[in-house]
Amino acid sequence: MKLISFDALRTLHMPGVTYIKPDHFYDRADEIRNADWVLFPQYWQINPLIYGLKVPVFPSPASYHLGHDKVEMTRAFRLIAPQHVPYTLIEANTPESAARVWSAMPAPFVAKIPKSSMGDGVFLIESQRDWQAYLAVSPVIYAQEYLPIDRDLRIVWAGNQIVGGYWRIQAEQGFYNNVAKGGQVEDGILPPEAIALVERLAQGLGIDHGGFDIAMVGHYPYVFEFNRIFGNQGLSGKQQAVDDAILSYLNQRSDGLDPDNPSKPPRAPLPQVL
Image 1: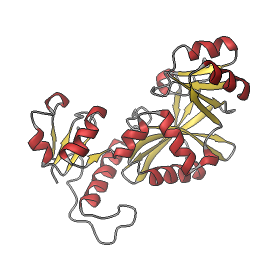
Image 2: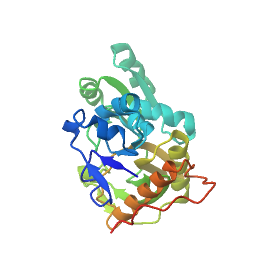
Image 3: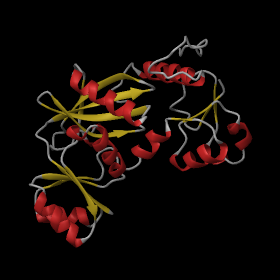
Image 4: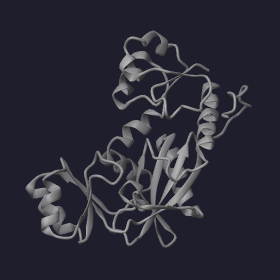
């Protein structure tokens, strides 16, 4: 396979990959057009690659389009697994909607800016003052029930399988579990209920690369979101497993197989990652 990457770090240990700087996208269009797969393009490149050059991209278009916006992501989750989505209200940011959401959501609750990551754009709403501060900076109202947890799970999906995961323990200041906000990483058993939910969401929505954030309330899993590009702080020693899962998946897809139910042996695999 001819593989072209727009992210040197994400594909550093993958053999036979040609790296192209995103700035050279148009200058090397013919080379890109002849690729079997284009790996980790930037978001602005997705539509030109799919509709202009008509090349397959990894992660999948669904991973990009759903992972780019919490509103779109949550709406998709509600169709696939509505009982596993925390109670959420999404409204236009108008005074009328703000008053209606405030009346409907018992405090404390969580409000989020739709396009944010690493814990940024997440607000704990305990008072009208908190609420007004959030409304002043978010283009859309995204309000979600507050779950009684002090940790959550990051489960990593690559290709068509789970390759690892870990617990994120709440930061000392409380509320945030994100590592970027001071949360601590802890290895532990991944609950089978959480694993089943991630498999259901990823396969149902066509996501092939994502870090899923799952909360366990007792033995019951809830999904917060997934991150198309996730950190590797909690995946010590597992990067090769991620790379291997991706390469195996791309090989199967290139052979025209359904990676979840192959009907024939795949062709000779790419060289193993060292």
